[in-house]
Image 1 (tube, rainbow, N blue to C red):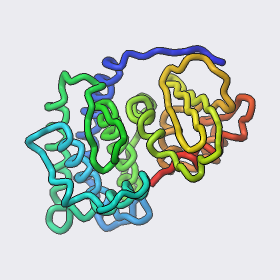
Image 2: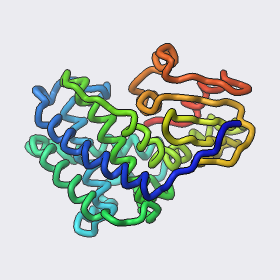
Image 3: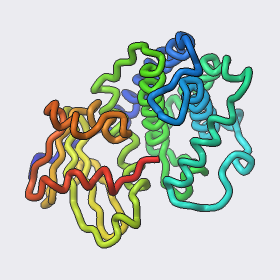
Length: 285
């Protein structure tokens, strides 16, 4: 059944903050180096400039959650109505591109730099399990660690989207990707479960990130629980993946067949064929 690992949440959160602090100036430099903001990006529906605008909105949003001085009137920004998790995030993503248009797009790099510095400054010394309310995610129980991990994931993944469109380098290290998985994915994978597809489904996945976190992903009739360092138990399927590979597969930036063919993702356990179902059960906007 494998060895139970343990982690220090405070130490890991500090490592995530350090990774974010290092990634922000890289992102700012990338935004400033883009030769053509109208070029296509790694997100089919968005230009490179659209992705930059989205990132500026992301930095505005997450900083507003932790800094009273950066408060936002979310009633005027959030999509109306309830909707599923994916519907809300899809609508929010579309709205985010509209927040930075026209002349404001030329200032996205400066905005990201300023809001990134503010986020790190106002959250310094705060406990990683401090609760944070993110209105656009509904009732999902967020913590500061979740938000830090999400900022890092948005920076890394959308930085790659920009770099692909601008034909510029954008390496993502396994250490960075591992921190994203550990800090944000236990919360986000559970929240992003597709309840319709998961109805009547009972599968326990042992998700092992090489050199990083180990997650027990248990889907039971329309609900999901994701646990770090779970006690030993029987699993239906074990998935072992390199950190960066898993991050890019999870965000649909790398096809799973390529990850498997390269040997950086593999399945095992009693029912290894169930591995393909995880990506269909956990939705991605």
